[in-house]
Length: 432
Image 1 (tube, rainbow, N blue to C red):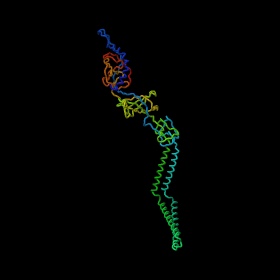
Image 2: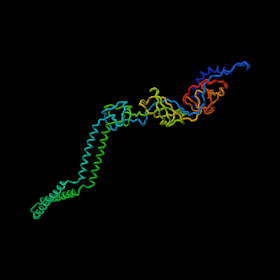
Image 3: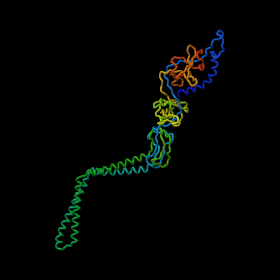
Image 4: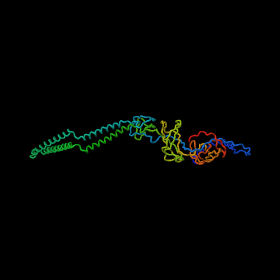
């Protein structure tokens, strides 16, 4: 007996006691224990009334039933945390609120960030003014002032030079002190230096701004703009928003609370789809995998049915039972489902085409061996069979029976071979 057949046998044992009460009557009716009498005095045997159905070729879709629990899908769950330290100024949501991506959840006091932003904007304006001035070059007024400076310093230098030349004769005749003469020479040298400086400044202004100076100013402007972008980000980070569409599943933020980058403020979960987690027995692992269809029936909602399919299996089987945890994705129609709800899961196994199938009620158990009572020439015969898959209404017979054979579904258990039977009208059968 295979592991798949054993539960079926156990279920049928409950009906054996009910059938045992009629065995004595049935065997007596077929004459198995009747006292020996002459053929002339033996009364005719009364056929036993039974119900029967024909073995049929059909496509069976077997399933297994499990208990499951709804859980949030990890990829549809988002934790909310701040991106800068500060103090919470306002909390704009409560647990259970539906939110969209980008909706504000929490606001951190923005005053410090806004001050940094204003300072960064002022620095950018300053650097932009510098580079604009360098690119446009000197103003005509600046050139004219530089020329006048050259002319003035040249005039001063010429006057001092004439004076020194005039004093040189007096110095040679010892009519002028050495100290006074040296002071005049020093004044002349200073005037010559001023003239040279003014002349160089004029030449620089007339030549225009050098490229390396513009490049240096441009680099300083780029740095200031980068600081401005950072300051703008800090202001934006004061608004903590939802990263996804979903529901506030957990909210830890409180007004006035101090936070840093490691503070967990809450969780947003997209409930449009959920996982159903359940265990698949090891005997069915070869028939169950990603894509296997499931139906989840929720008792809390009047046995409402939710359809889905297995998305993933756990990486390791249970060490004690060999069972494997499975996760099936289910569309949350109407938004009724929430993590933690229990449900009954029906896992649909691969279909079996062209199966010789009989109503499950036709299969009985005899000392651990599956048997079926067949009707041939209005007489009952019990035969051993080999079973395959089973649905709620039908069971596959892989050996011992052919399509079209008439099998007893009610009243056939314990009949001796060759016992006459009378077929009662068949009741409507369930779909496979």
